[in-house]
Amino acid sequence: MKILLTGAAGNLGKALTARLSPTHAVIGADIVGAGLQRLDISDYAACQRLITRLSPDCIVHTAAWTDVNGCARDPAKALRVNGVGSHHLAAISARYDIPLLYVSTNEVFDGERRQPYTEYDRANPINAYGYSKWYGERAIAQLNPRHYIVRTSWLFAHGGRNFLQAILGAAAAGKPLQVVTNEVANPTYTEDLAAGIAELIQSERYGSYHLVNEGAVSRWGLARFLLDEAGYADAPLARISRHQWQRASLPPEYTAMANIAGASIGIALRPWQEAVAAFLQTEAFS
Ligand SMILES: NC(=O)c1ccc[n+]([C@@H]2O[C@H](COP(=O)([O-])OP(=O)(O)OC[C@H]3O[C@@H](n4cnc5c(N)ncnc54)[C@H](OP(=O)(O)O)[C@@H]3O)[C@@H](O)[C@H]2O)c1
Image 1 (spheres, helix red, strand yellow):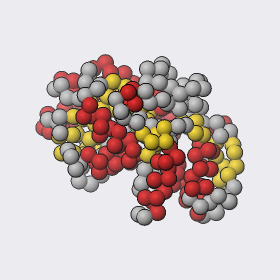
Image 2 (cartoon, rainbow, N blue to C red):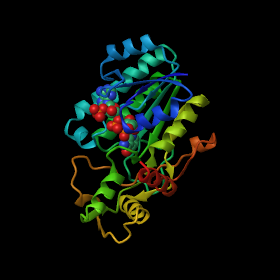
Image 3 (tube, helix red, strand yellow):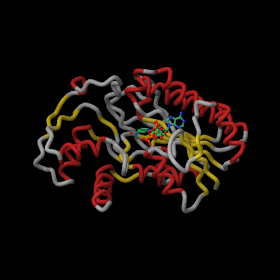
C-alpha cells in the first residue's frame, strides 16, 4: 500500500515509519522534520494538494498538537490543529474514498468511571486537548465511512521525552521524586501500538478501537515498577495527589480503556509490565 503518514516526525510517527516501511511505501509528512513532506494539517488547501498529488491508498493520521498545557492556554489553536485539521483530512479522504486511521486519546473521557472505558462509552472531554481530539473523532466518524479511530494513552517511545525518561533521568541524577497516585490509565509502548496499527489497516474492519497495552496503573505505580525494573529499587518515591501537581491542563482522573473491538479481531497488545521491560532492554542497548 502507499501510505500517507501525518505526524511522521513525532514519537509514534517514527515507530510507525519503522514498522510500516518494510512492507509498504510510506510517505511521511509533518510540520517539522527533515526528509518529510511539509504539511500543516490546519491548511485545507495544503492537505488537498498533497493528497491529490500522492493519491495514497490509506492515510494514517497521527499529527497533533500534543502539548496539553499549551492546548489549555490556547484552546483556539488546539481546535484549529487537532479538530479542524482532522476535519480537513476526513473531508478530503472521503471525497477520494481513501481509508483514514486517526489516532486519538484517553483524554476524550471525563475520568469519572471506575472501570475501563469501552470503545463506545460516551466521550465527555474535560480539557482543551481532549475536546480538540474529540472534535477530530467526530469529524472523521461523520465524514469518512472508511475510518479507524484508534484511542491510546500514556505513550512511551525511544528517543522521545516522556514520563518514563523523566523518571529515569531524575533517579539517575539522585533527584527527589514525587508522583501522582490518583491518575490511572494504560501505559502504551509506541512499538506495540505501531504493530497493532499495521495489522488494523490491513483488516478493513472500520470503527473505533482502544489499542493500549493491557492493564491499567497509576502514575505512581508505573514509576515504582519502572524504578524497580531499572535497578533503582532503593530510590524513594513520594506519593502526591493530582491536585498537588499544578498544571495548566488537568487530565481526567481514571481513563483506563478496555480493548474489546481489537481483541475481537485478534489485535491485542501485551501487558504494560512486559512492554516496559522490553522498552528498558532496548534502551540499555541503544
Ligand atoms: N503521547 C501520548 O501519550 C499520547 C496519548 C494518547 C494519544 N496520543 C495521540 O497520538 C498521536 C501521536 O502522539 P505523539 O506522542 O507521537 O505526538 P508527537 O511526538 O507530538 O507527534 C506529533 C507530530 O505532529 C506534529 N504537528 C503538530 N502540529 C501540526 C500541524 N499543524 N500539522 C502537521 N503536523 C503537526 C508535531 O510537530 P511539533 O512537535 O512541532 O508540534 C509532531 O511532529 C497524537 O495524535 C496524539 O494526540 C498521544
